[in-house]
Length: 58
Image (tube, rainbow, N blue to C red; front, side, top):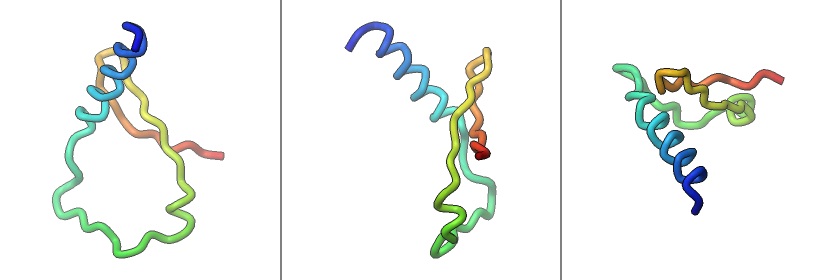
């Protein structure tokens, strides 16, 4: 693995770890509707290294 690939991987791992926990009282549904299974997301990282998930709209 090259240094550039390792740096990108480290950045992605750090961003995922900084997403934080689920909100208090969150309950996972038993089954997800089909429309929810088809949703797609990407991760944005700002200049300070904070991450957030953004839904991709078609």
